[in-house]
Figure 1: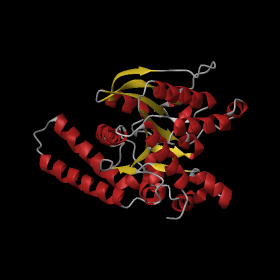
Figure 2: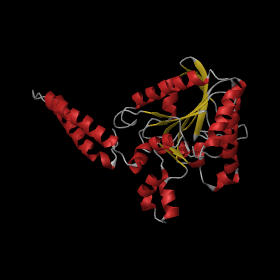
Figure 3: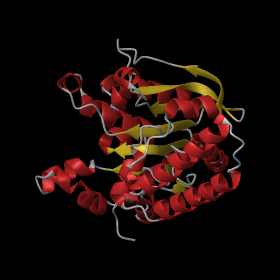
Figure 4: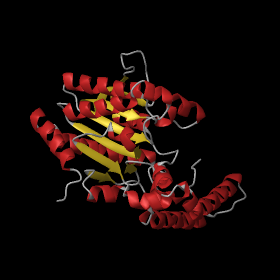
Length: 317
């Protein structure tokens, strides 16, 4: 059953009414209310279009964090054939917050790396709520190195509130692992594409997005800090998160305008959580187009374009 966000209450009421009518039809009684159901369905579509056309930055944060948005494993399952998962950092650990492996995207061999949050208590604990530890980033480094050795493009799927801030992670070199992962991506001699599919939070997200092309779903967010964290620092009040979200310019249109991302992928009406298959298909089409463009470039050109892209960020144009 779809979970509704607070601002979707008008839609929830309409869809609950539709569900009641359909149950009445199912129970029998010779009642024909198909016209009424069609009318209400049209209202739902109209209401969703109106709501999602004028989302505030804070509402986009809520959509990006929606528990039912498709996650990395769903993208792997839907877009790849012959997928083979690869685990471990070869130093004694395996972090399930970062998953990856090799497979084929429309017949083309690729390496995929993604952050996985989980959907219920059990899977969220298994994947550490999508917050990687150093061993997760070292696993990513291993996969980047493997991609370079076998000349396979790298696709990353980013959805994390940030790297795990625990003492155990710090003790094992969290900051160094993130920095090294960025360096591995910047040096990769193959096409690299990152897609922000939900929340792109802090250095934990940047580590997997130092790529030739950074794409972002329409209602995803990408920021140096969570709005709650920024509000706590600036105003010492996490309740100011909505104000911080506005100031952080974390939405896809803002980031495209600032040239911090390269492409925005349109989502289905009502967000990717409402029609996951449609959203995944759109991402697959965008990945195909980007790969067609990037695979024509020589390794030296890929490296120089990537370097110039990140060095130019923050400069006045």
